[in-house]
Image (cartoon, rainbow, N blue to C red; front, side):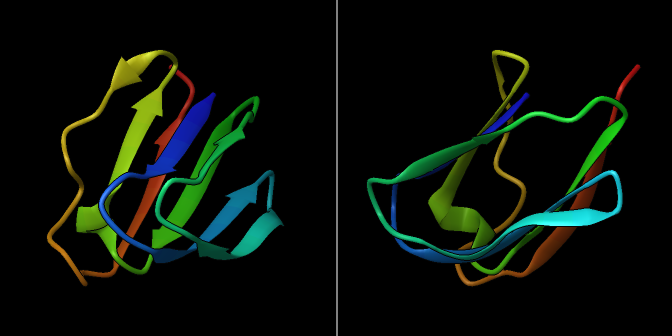
Length: 77
């Protein structure tokens, strides 16, 4: 389970699970969305520095700077 929270600003995000886009659009400051995938979750973040990510209950280090675009895939162990 991946939780994406827009804590410091707005960002456009795209989340792909099992090859299908499950969410594509803006995430505004103060909002958060949770996604669950069996094998993997792929994300595109348009403003990585303004987002906090939590994977399976564990807060992740920032994936990038403000206004930095990041693509990342999280795979099940």
